[in-house]
Image (tube, rainbow, N blue to C red; front, side):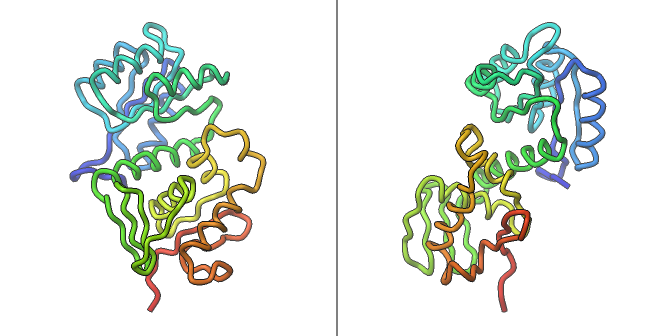
Length: 236
């Protein structure tokens, strides 16, 4: 269950569709979150200011203040992560949503499992940036502030993409990450990687830099037909 200082994380859902609000509330509560709801922008702003949620799921098409304006108002005062959840699927809408301060953008109709994964990813990134500035596991020593890596005590230079991949893997120790999920997190706005095997190529390059034997990896293992897993268990 997601916790922060002894309490479940609070998520505010702002959407004028009552069915979607109730569906999200039920599913998010099953995931262990405390859920606040609002059916319009003004109510959402008031709840955000009063209850200080840990994350906001925000629709663009609201009956009073639209989602873009609501997002801009929130961003003037707060740094809550915001996920836009909307039926608007044009690239221009997505760009506008991200430029006004949203952390992510999901188009309706959506798969709740994808939304849940995006939420967990945001919280994991926040936890790492606030608490785990440094990560050590077996031969790996990662500094998230300087974005540097040492393997067996020796500095190893990673590209930006390789570092993002490694950071993603260590954020989900022991969990299987699908290729689609990896692509969405590392190359979220790129059309190039949606239809290519670039994830596999970059994973192989990363393995060559961190594994003793890239063909017999100890850290990033392949899960056949699904994706990859960061092997978190220490070997005897």
